[in-house]
Every structure is written in structure tokens, then in C-alpha cells.
Length: 406
Ligand code: GLA
Image (tube, rainbow, N blue to C red; front, top):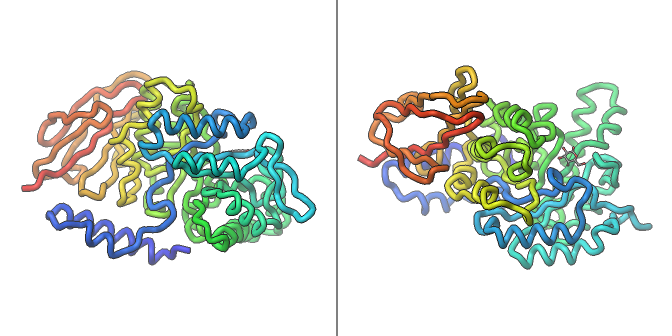
């Protein structure tokens, strides 16, 4: 378990490292002296079945997603986890061991297949007796289930509160119910650790009870900060822009999770999906694609695999962006990066294009600097003190601003 002290120490260490880089001191050797967290040192990247397939998921579809993750170039861009969400579960055998249902004839063989592609396999359960879709949960079988997952070769567990609410209702007080939830999440964490297999532990309880304040202490590597995302600009933007103020709770090994991506599912236009990717990258969010990877347009692949945008999400400093300013529908979000530069999103939440002004001084830039537009993939010339540009409707201009050495 990571203590608050550890987290503060890590953040301070990494920030000092960033400052040293600015003065040209080689950082590499110094970074190596402290151990990165072994699990999720950067936000997990991969794919999850729920947003597109929901209950219509089976072994063949999962294999096809793994194939497409490789052939599309997504694996090489950093996407690793192939995560099966709810509805894989069967019943328990006489010894209480969880079985897969008929749509997943052999989970170990599926894991072997996914691993053979250089990818990892994730699975889903609930601390309750039932999952959200009404399948078998892990209540009273936590140790057994963790061992089964490890034996299958599972690398990631999404643990979704749902059915556990029935258990929480037996507490006479809200504080008692909260404590039950904490203990349930901790119980599965301890069971996963006991297997000896590194398994990313992803809490899903919809951002209730300020999970960002205790998620890391129960062993979570990520925790959902919101209710379920939908494939619409309204849903995505309410969730994404609603993350303001949470940056202090994330860092290497433990991440706020504003839910899976909807890029490529068809409910948003290109500018809106750019906003989705940009915001999630700035937020250091897990990047779990939620579309059908076997049927992607070149535009969807380009959105998901933009290396410079992914590099923002995966920056090792692990500093989640926060809102710098909001004027009506115009919002500026920024995060510090390990090399001393900053990633800055200029967002227009309006349904028509708007002119926006970025003030470099307000972001802490005084000396000479370089500005790169990450979606355009090129350096741009700006004024010395500010940048005036038109941002498309529901769109974004995503910049990386780097100090020039003097
Ligand atoms: C909840 C979760 C979703 C998904 C479904 C599956 O709604 O928030 O992400 O896992 O359950 O039933």
C-alpha cells in the first residue's frame, strides 16, 4: 500500500528531477536510484469490451481485438491491455471455483493467445454477490477468484461495486457502509498481491465517496471518478471538464480514471473526439479504447495512435492537468512534463468556432520558448507573450511549450 508520505516523496522527487533537467543535469542516472512503482507507473493503456460490445462479447471477438491491436499499430503506440468487461462469468463448481460461461470456453488458452501477441489480458468482477449485469461476483470468494485469475494469466482486474451495495445496506450508518466498501476493496487487493502475479487493480465505484482520497490506500492503481461515459459530446465533456481539482490525487502507480474512451464509436465528430483524446491525455487518464478495433477508419487509428498526444498521457512525471482558466465556454488546462515543458489544451466548449487567447506569462513562461501544435504535428510561431487562435466548435488546440536553454 502506498502511504501519503510515499506519494508526496515521489511527487517531490520527480519535480526536482524536472527542475534538474532544465539546468542540463542528466536526470537518467538519478531517476534510476528510486524505484518506479512496478504496476502502472504510467496510466494503463489498452482496450475494454464494454463501451462497444457490452454483453455481446466472446472469445472470438476478444481474439479479433487482440489481432487488430497489433495490425493497426496500436500495440506499438503503447496499448497493451485487452480487457474483458462484465458477462464472461459462469457459475461456480462444487469447490466454489468460478467457471467461465459458454462464450469463453477456455480463459487460459485465451490469455495464452493474447500474451503471444505481446499483449496482456484483463478481466472484470464485483465485490458483491452479483455484477452490474447480474453475473456471478466475488463476494466470499475473493482469495479463490484472485488465484483463479492468476492461474489463467490475468494481468488486470476491474472490480465494480454494483452488487456490493446490497451488503452495504445492512450497515445502520453511512460511515459503516463506507467502511465495508473500503474493506471489500482492500480484501481483493490483498488477495491479488498474495498470488504473486502483478495485476493492475482498477476500482470502479463511479467516483462516489471521494474515492480519489482513499483509492490508493486500498491498493487501487486506478479508480473511476465518474458514472458511466456515453458516446456523446455532452457525456464526454461533462465528465472530462468535471475532473478539475483532482490532479493532486494522481501520480505514478495510482490514477484517476474518467472512464474508457469512446473514440471511433461514431457518436462524436472529429473535433469532439480530438477533445476527448486531448483531455484524457492531459488528465493522465488510463487510455482504454472502447471501440471495435477490427473495424477502424484511418481517422480513428490516427486519433488513437498520435504519438505526441500519447506521450503527454504517458509522461513519467505523472502530473495530471488542472484547469488554468475558464471564461464562458473557453477553458485552458495545463500539466507539467518531466522535461520541464508543459502540455496545454485550449478548449472551446461552444457549438461554434471561437477566437481564444493564451497568455504565456500566466503559464509561467518568461524566457524564450518553443511551441508545438501536437495535432498538427509541427512547431508554430506565436507572439512572445501570447497566442491568438481560432478553436473549432467543441474542439481543441493542444500545445507543448518548451523552454529553450539559454
Ligand atoms: C458498470 C460499469 C461499466 C461496466 C458495466 C458492466 O455500469 O460502470 O463500466 O463495467 O457496469 O455491467
